[in-house]
Amino acid sequence: MTNREKGTELENWVLEQFKNDKLARLSRASGGSNDIGDVVCSDYFIECKNWNKKNVNLSMKTWNHLINQLPISTTKIPIYVYKNNEGKRFVVLSAEDFFRKIKE
Image (cartoon, rainbow, N blue to C red):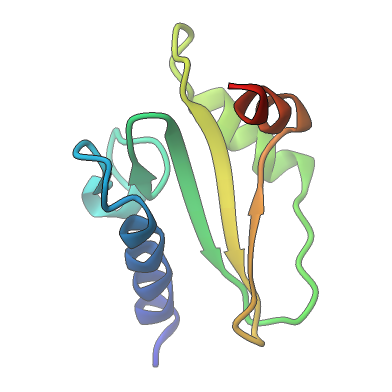
């Protein structure tokens, strides 16, 4: 399976998790257009990354790239979904956003 196919598989898996959200969809051109992230839904902008390594690090440069794309007035939460080479998936979001969603 190519890296692109693995990435598409992860994006489709994430989208499936939001099947009850009628606004959930894959971004046009997988985030390569004016869309933010790879999956867009009612409450989140989601960037998906499939890593061909066991340990995955989120650099501040990568995080800031997603944050800087957000519209100023949005209430949507930015999220990174990673999959490592063992097939384990992880979700990364700010602690403030995480605890705010828990309290809702």
